[in-house]
Amino acid sequence: MMLRLWHISLSLALVIACRYGVAEATLGEPADTIARDTRKFSGVLQKSTARAKYRVQSIASGTTATTVREYVAPSGVVFAVAWNGLVHPDLHVLLGNYHQDYRKALSRAVRQHGRRGAKVTTDKLVVETWGHMRNLQGRAYLPELLPEGVSVDEIR
Image 1 (tube, rainbow, N blue to C red):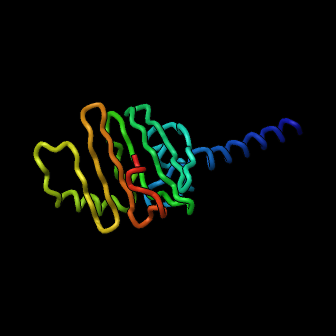
Image 2 (image 1 turned 120 degrees about the vertical axis):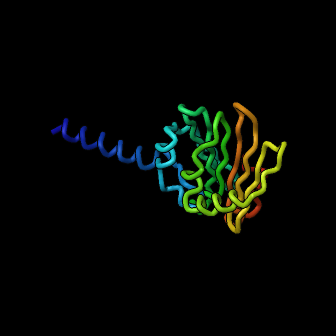
Image 3 (image 1 turned 135 degrees about the vertical axis):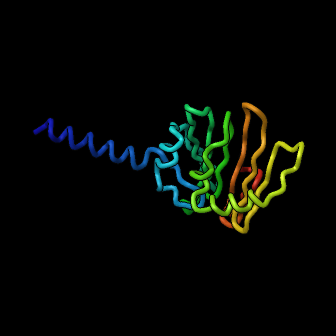
């Protein structure tokens, strides 16, 4: 009987840990779409930092040495993502439903020679990438979802 109770308690603890232990989500979606990004990036939850008007959740990918930070508004929706590391993360995962719009805008963008960075803007989304070998960086955000009083410069 005690062994069965212990087994049930352990199972319940694992379910709760899996459900609430990794708060990662795709841009524009609720933060409770937990663990999907972490699994897709083969990542490990690093930390969650509370700011005055939002929360930042970080994951580190051991396979690509890239860190992804997801910015969650008090409403629970991810309004921005940022990254840095050896490679850019899979934007299809991070941008979710906005990826197709991003790809269309990227195909129309004019590449400026000699520039290492790029900025792609759609009606709802801004994606910026920059950096150099072994230090690639970027950010993507939804201007309409930025919490009031939050500057784009805070997304880094």
